[in-house]
Amino acid sequence: MPNLDGVGVLKALPAEMRRRVVVVSMASGESDLGLAALATGAFDLVQKPTGLAIDSLRDIADELVSKVVLAGRLRPRAKAPSRPPVPALVTKRSDCVVLIGTSTGGPQALTRLLAEFPADFPAPIVIVLHIPIGYTAAFAARLDADCAIDVVEASEGLELRPGLAIVAEAGKHLYLTTHAGRARVHLDLQPVDSMHRPSVDVVFQSAARNLGPRALGVVLTGMGEDGLLGARAIVEAGGRVLTETEASCVVYGMPRVVKEAGLAEAEAPLEAMAAAIAARV
Image 1 (cartoon, rainbow, N blue to C red):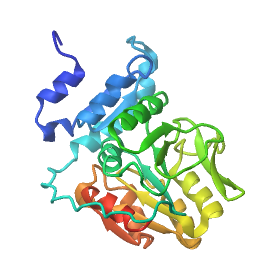
Image 2 (cartoon, rainbow, N blue to C red):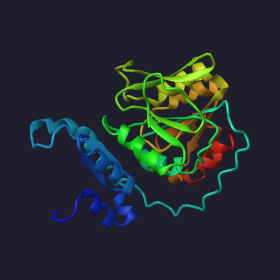
Image 3 (cartoon, rainbow, N blue to C red):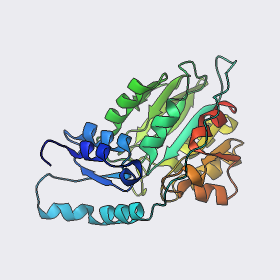
Image 4 (cartoon, rainbow, N blue to C red):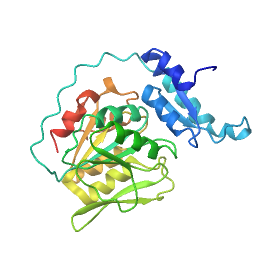
């Protein structure tokens, strides 16, 4: 592409066409470009093991084909309604912990959602996003630069605090633990047989065990069922769960299974999700 890179091509496309593009990229040296492509509106990202045309590229075949097929099935998106204002938060601190799980379409959704929260948002936020290894540090840094709240990649022992959003590190499960009333992050490779690592189910279930009714789960756009078991655990522990509506999802998979299981207290389109969360913390 003389004089134009992949992100440039995306920017030249109409918004609806960008939503049907699957980006193939290497994390090493290309994480910023891959994230820029997602922020520009690409459907999803597939990580290739090498830049060379060798047999190992066949390893990504199943993932690439499935995502291309899903992108091809996208319907035109209806015009988004006006965004309701985020209610002013009187309290300076909340006992609630907001737990967000998302997959396909998640980078764009998180960028829009987190930008709505003020710097003094009274609750901590923990995020699990299905994204290839090597991209979460750059993604957290990009969010931190664009949002009023602080955003960091998860690290072992990191303490939750109001106004801080923690993005789970790709390739490791994130558990929440509590000691002396303080919630902290624990990273672990177990369970190794999980379909996703990090898993939304893992962080939701650990929050249910350690936070009980203080847990507020939020399931955004994504394919599959990750988050269903965790949402059930949160509800059984007295916590609450919100889901994104089909109208604003890139892929209405993860929110759908939670809603159909009767676990969602309410659902909201992405443009109203910040207000829905703020009303409950």
